[in-house]
Image (cartoon, one colour):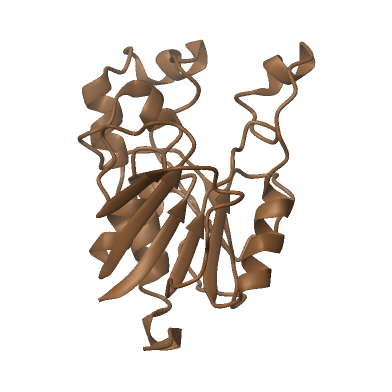
Length: 209
């Protein structure tokens, strides 16, 4: 079986999709992840963890430096690490096939822009993806004809409650993301498995056996 590495894995939203695409997945995160769903887990620094020996590498460096959800904290002087450029350099150095995931507006080449509506999910959650092979796939444009859940930060913004007409529960968030094992904080840092499964199914024929 092909082996994948998920850097900054969290509880494993991307990992689950990578598994569904046929990979054995090893996750790495600097924090304990008791609900991680991958095949192996190492609590370690993604910036120093060995990258050799994997057919494919996924990386989701922290997004708070670029995300709208953290704008208030940045305005108040909170400083977040800029790990995206360093992560890219590490992946380029090891070669092979890789994907970097982050939020809209991050300093990256957005080969893919994915949102929940493109996968039949009742979810507004756009994410950008840069690939080592300059991937390209024409998908329907992002379109939400009616209000849907938006998983942001640690609470529910008033504008989300107003649009939906109700205050989403953890059950609503899990259903929208296609994730049934995470708590609210973990969900706020995750991507739907549908995104990573779709992207990983674009590359099997490009991987070295």
